[in-house]
Image (cartoon, rainbow over all chains, first blue to last red; front, side):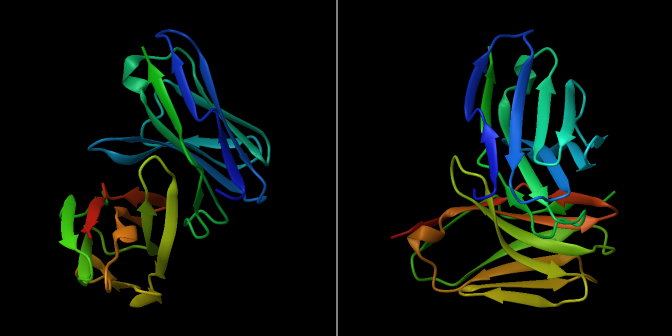
Length: 113
Length: 110
């Protein structure tokens, strides 16, 4: 999607290894979000950021950490990947906390074997 | 706790039909409600955003309504086309959070 890119698009990793997913935006939006999407659960918020170095936990934050050292980049780290973290991960950005102007990235499909 | 439900989970209709997708929420104290579309293997695309003070929004063949008192929103799609096949999700802005429904998978048969 224009203005927001995620990398990598696909990744296969082994249980116990650290993994970092990157979200990059060119819109200068204040809010950035990491979601995971699993069948039967819909979208669940992992972490979000409301400014540089300002982050907070979402609904399913255990096993994940985030960092935002620049407005344009929001990193999601799985400290020690587990099979339950196999999922599709989406990054999103918005102009306001209420979600107006919400834009999603194309997603990262992560498989933990 | 706000909960968002979308029924049915899947819907298949012939091309050309008008159809309605439903979204219900348990707490009427919302800031806004949005409808998104997700194509297989892709991200989500915003379709319509309804602020809490509004009753409906329209974009082309799409019309979304909001009734806060009954905790319901509908997405009306006129003259459906095969290209409308996708999963449609609604999300409610409430209590400083965005709460997502699980989506309705729509298939339009040619």
